[in-house]
Length: 150
Image (cartoon, rainbow, N blue to C red; front, top):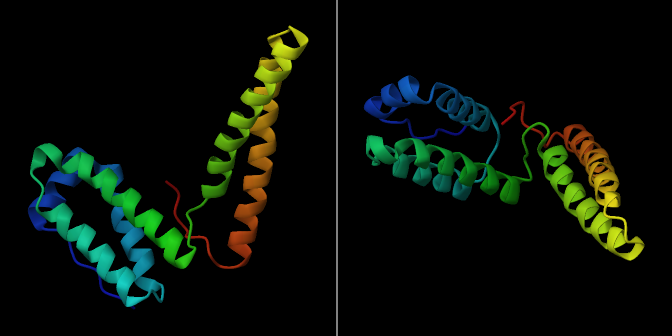
């Protein structure tokens, strides 16, 4: 079990008052990651991010909290291939919507009927979500999914 730096008491108090949900999510993420067998370099990088969070003033703390969570999540995805629940569904939904809007625009211009955009956008979203759900199932089967949702 790896140990992570603890946030400063003043920082924790401020976060619990102002950004309760985000601070609870960060604490839960760190708790889950502490149970995983992570590489030392990854633990050091996470601790460095937490150290940076401790030195911010109250004005910039909430913004930095969101950045810290995003950096930690990207780092564990890249290094350990660990993802949160519905990570792939949400990501692929966006890819599907983008693809659907491009296809709808192109086909709409070709057919001189831009209402095709309204058809292809939700179709792309559904196809993207289907791909993402399958990827989420595969990640869960491989034990690469964290029991946490952001």
